[in-house]
Image (cartoon, rainbow over all chains, first blue to last red):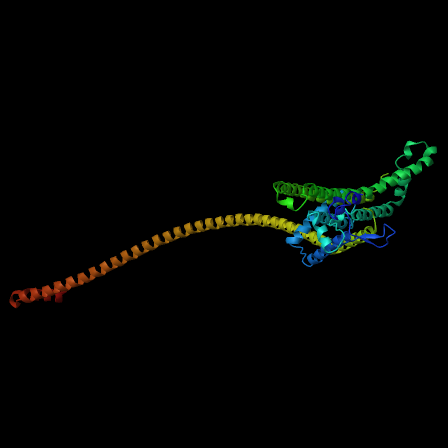
Amino acid sequence: MSEQAHGEQEHGSSIADHLEYWIYKVDESNPFMQIHVDTMIVTLTIASLMIGFAIWLRGKIVAGAPTGAQNFVESVVDFINTTVKDNFPVHNPIVAPLAFTIFVFILLCNTIDILPAYLLGHIAHAFGAPAFRPVPTNDLNLPAAMGVSVFILVLYYEFKLKPIHFMQDLIMQPFTNLVPWYLKPVIMPINLVLKLVEEVAKPLSLSFRLFGNMFAGEVIFLLIASLLLVGTVDELLTVGGVITEAIAILVGLAWSLFHMFIGLLQAFIFMILTVVYLSIAHQPVEH
Amino acid sequence: MSLDLTFIGQIVVFLTMVILLTKLLYTPLNDAMAARTQRIADGLAAAEAGKNAQADAEAEAKVQIEKAKQTAQEIVAAAERRALAVSEESIAKARHDSEMIVQSAREEAEAEAGRLRQTLRQEVATLAVMAAEKIVEAELDAKKHAALIEKVIADGVAA
């Protein structure tokens, strides 16, 4: 739609253009069979950097007094461990490293938003790419992938630890005890539907919360830029142009700081909700 | 904004990262931290034990010092008593010795005096005899004393 509205302008001048991905279509007819090259490049880079950092740090880990990078990572690990310990009824060795990975990975992805919104797109244009969205958490695919992974893990533990209780919950909650016995078969499908909605809401809310926050932040960056920047190069040196640029820098800086805080907060929320969902799956059955 | 193959790719990336970071970063770090916690706990326990041992040793030392003090006092008291006894003894002995010396000196002096008196007496007698001889030589006059001599001789013969 934005293409029609700004059809006359050249590419890269409207906000919607900056929300395009660098898409490689595997199969033209099927909208699922395409891949976001920019998201993949950035996440693979971050993942390689993290793994490289892990390999580099692994050789210098000491049990004595830690220094430098080890000290910093240890404070993060300690923070995650405390969070997991506070929320978890039993010990599960998978949860803490999972939460650690989620937190650090999302935080790094969100932090890429500190780069100027238009800059990477223009650089990518210079190299011939159609578009470039640097922040992978802006792409629904990444939050959804993590949310669904966590959800599958939750389901796995629900079935593994208390299969009968979980199946019972699916059809017996929440209404069964409120109706007379002859209505119970009628109420069961309704329960099932409600319970399914409740369960599916978990990965949906998990991924859309992160995606929505980061996407909105990106849009606001683009709005600040497009509303305050002057129209042509000549106007840059006029009095009004200079004032506009100053305001744009100040507002952009303020929003950058706030958005970095949101990125940290969203990483923390995603991490802690993962821990909470998994801890619910680990809760012992109440009789 | 729709899900596509990127979704699958992200799941793969995410799970790979979870596994690799768990193996490469989290587990070794966590082990190191646990080892450090253990070491700190051990160190604190050792410090506590050391403190207790020190307190025990100090109490023991106090007892020993008290005992040593008592022993020293006893030794000093005994030495003082002994010294007193020794000095009294030596004073008595010295007094006795001096009395002995004085006495022997006195006896010796008396003996000497006796001897001198004896000698003096002999010399006086000799001197008297010599004087007498002189007088006798000077005064002796056969005529004058012939009668006396004769009388003595006569007395002597008569006796």
